[in-house]
Image (cartoon, rainbow over all chains, first blue to last red; front, side, top):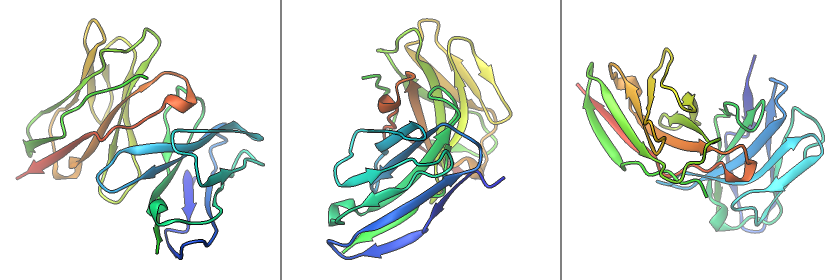
Length: 112
Length: 110
């Protein structure tokens, strides 16, 4: 049972490049979410999904797109990376909105 | 929004109990109190949660005030491995409201 996995672990991008951060969970959880954590800060919610085919915006959605075609996967896309998107990105899943969230190990993104 | 207030940092000696406070004066009747912790260079991990009654598990205890406007996470015997940032959050059942503040950084010394 792998839990929540994220790839890549670390990525360097140039301004304007695009990329997709992958997130997968094997717990059959309906709820999945993406957070970003800037140095010395707490986590801020980017996008979330309450089930396959359903996504919505969190606190800081600008510059990011998501989709949820399967229960297992919830990729986060950066269409045109900016230095302000340099951060650590965490994916999380839970069985329901009031249930325990399980977090992945994170992806460290550096945008030059 | 359901907000929580925590001290920025706390220190403890190893093997001693630690009481981490959290204020949530705007809590509503159906909000659950969740605690997570984040070890260095890792994602947050669940510690404990409760609604009204005090809760115990293998990691910690959660003491909830009678008016629910505050709670305390209790680590009974702190170890060096408990050094982390501890987050107290209110789970309102609304996906967009799940927010993590800056938490309390716990330092544990020998």
